[in-house]
Image (cartoon, rainbow, N blue to C red):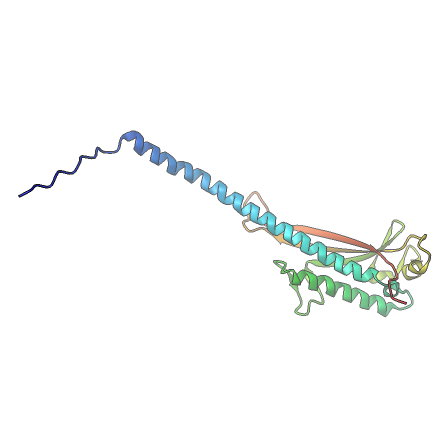
Length: 195
């Protein structure tokens, strides 16, 4: 009968080895929350950049439409101004919704939206007037008439601003859970209607 050879004796782990493995666990426990927080901040920065691009694009879409034709701001046709404003807001809201803007709040047809909110003004010679109440006039000047004059005359500018409330992924006590993000777009009114 043969006897199995005895198993080699394994000495117990040294105290230094046990201490080092415990130290690794403590280091990981200290570093892991910091790494997690950094990953969340990087993700929020990416979301913020995407939202800023979407809001700026939507503001540009609205301002471009408003500046495309001088007839949009004809002081003799208030219905044109009302229709222009409604179409500008619809275009801005549709562009914001189409970019899958997180937290977008608007009506089902995107005719208006509250996040981002839409404001419009006409500017000329350092003066400004709300698009809705201006009647196409800024500082006593008819914006549709100015656009028809020779290019040496300063044209009125359509200024669209969209204000959006950006919400962070992880709100902490020392950081706000949301903050405002606004984007402006300005286009000079030019009569680009084909002849």
